[in-house]
Image (cartoon, helix red, strand yellow):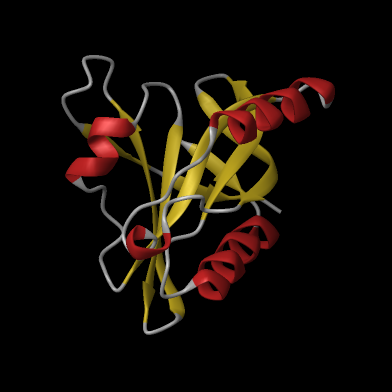
Length: 141
């Protein structure tokens, strides 16, 4: 389970809509507590994929990943996941998502249809890396 606030949901949705028709991406910082992931901070990241592929792929450069980890550590937080959008596609992980994910992290996907954010889902990769399991998103004020 991952716990987010309504404000965090709106931040991710706004980012997804602002990048449409391309994919957006970002990091999710928070804490692992009692089997739950509690979101504290959303960090939008620029999609560094080449322009012709940004509509269905995102790329987080290693230096951006490192920056997110350092930001989390300075704040006493953990990297608990990532979010990205699926322009004009369902909020379900693709085969590409499966091949590039790591266990433990939450992978939040926002479906964006014709520029409007819609369904938001979260997924966690099984430890054997064979499939994603859907993760409950709960809102906390």
